[in-house]
Image 1 (cartoon, rainbow, N blue to C red):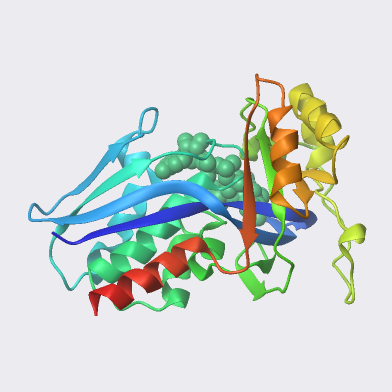
Image 2: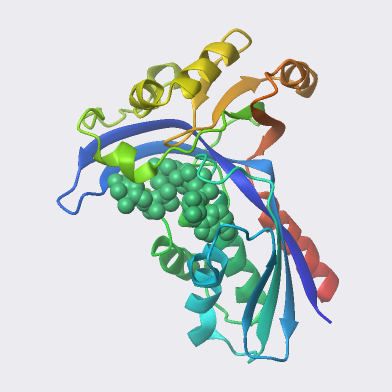
Length: 284
Ligand SMILES: C[C@](O)(CO)[C@H](O)COP(=O)(O)OP(=O)(O)OC[C@H]1O[C@@H](n2ccc(N)nc2=O)[C@H](O)[C@@H]1O
Ligand SMILES: Nc1ncnc2c1ncn2[C@@H]1O[C@H](COP(=O)(O)OP(=O)(O)OP(=O)(O)O)[C@@H](O)[C@H]1O
């Protein structure tokens, strides 16, 4: 039986600028996305029943609301292999934490099933389907460190050194909608003018989220004692950046036990794409 196992990586927004609010409520933004070599694990197996099954760590998510289900369903019209699929999910990424776990699961499902169901869709076509599932799905489909513009869908690959990150989940759930609809969110950061430097950037959601969720402020204050640190996306996860793994791990060991954290390396090419290429080579 054909089985394809892939990692759905975490993403970090190394910065996040909000430039404007559009008439439809969505925000124009500029953000540098990178993917880490750590994430959820998804195993895909084709089955004879014409069904989309999801097993594993799915507690708390209704089957039809699961982004894995939505992604698989969106590919049904494109199948040339008329089989169902069983997806086994092992969740490692905090949910609703700003590391994009749901979007990454969706993108990984689109990439896997495009292969197993022999849909023959290009990355561009998959990204277009993915955008309807979430603003961050296209980044994971293309799988490269990238500067995102527009509402997050205009992506330009960006050369940025690979680094080690300590990611801390403070244990509070931040609602993305709540942050984006808050009147106090700054929405008029000027667009970047090249050449720009990381020192000129920030996360525009950070001050507001720190005010609304004191645990996020506590986390950032703690991380900043050790290394340059920021919040990712609309939170609640925060990251500190290190040049080497050992220093990051040493800080992780000192982290307060009420928080969850992990250390991972950024990858200029997503781990999913590397794994898919290896699998395809073996299948040939
Ligand atoms: C801001 C980021 O966290 C950066 O990584 C993401 O782009 C948000 O991605 P996401 O959670 O997948 O977001 P979506 O499910 O597409 O949108 C959730 C909500 O966020 C707001 N939203 C999202 C993206 C965007 N460019 N402008 C917005 O205003 C909208 O209120 C939307 O209803
Ligand atoms: N497979 C899935 N994994 C995680 N969340 C899922 C999944 N399917 C649906 N969801 C829903 O999507 C919501 C957002 O999940 P996700 O982990 O992507 O948020 P996030 O890390 O804040 O992402 P972002 O930075 O893109 O806002 C969750 O609260 C959950 O209800």
